[in-house]
Length: 203
Ligand SMILES: Nc1nc2c(ncn2[C@@H]2O[C@H](COP(=O)(O)OP(=O)(O)OP(=O)(O)O)[C@@H](O)[C@H]2O)c(=O)[nH]1
Ligand SMILES: [Mg+2]
Image 1 (cartoon, rainbow, N blue to C red):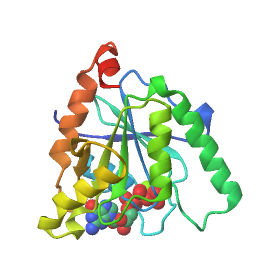
Image 2: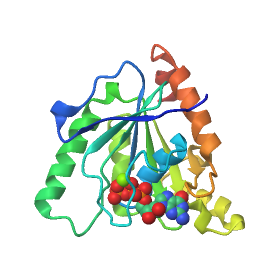
Image 3: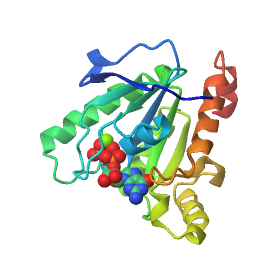
């Protein structure tokens, strides 16, 4: 699959803003600063598509990007301590609404930092995805920050801690492009599924 000219579509602050797409919508979730926007930019090969930032909690809206054959939804990050309680409640409601319309979401990329153990929030997110019976893949971000020999053991450890098969965890780096091909291959499989029959098998 060739990705070119990925474009920003729209932002949604609430349920009314959710889009009804005629192609698969794939969500990207993870804690603040884990690299969600950078992941999207790396797939698009466009560093300016999604806004990235050193300041965690930057993306407060759901941002949709059209990749031609599919849509990526950049979800606001969780686990940012400095956010006010009211803001957190708003976030929770937005995500709840988003995931509760599971039939509109073809897949979720759940991003976790390859250097750290999954946080309680990361584990909650996995529980949540399982609860809504959403197919997902874990993307272990910032792999360039580990020595090459440590990448595989880190993936294995991450997979074990969240009770997933190693094959469902992809080491990724927005910086050096590691894992980009694996993610695209995964997306190809997701969008080639038609009629939902194969989904039932996967689930
Ligand atoms: N070295 C390295 N840095 C990365 C990588 N991905 C993201 N970063 C850096 O991590 C910081 C956060 O990246 P973002 O992509 O903005 O993270 P985010 O998950 O979208 O953050 P929020 O929108 O705040 O939830 C930025 O300074 C990025 O440059 C990566 O693969 N390698
Ligand atoms: Mg972001």
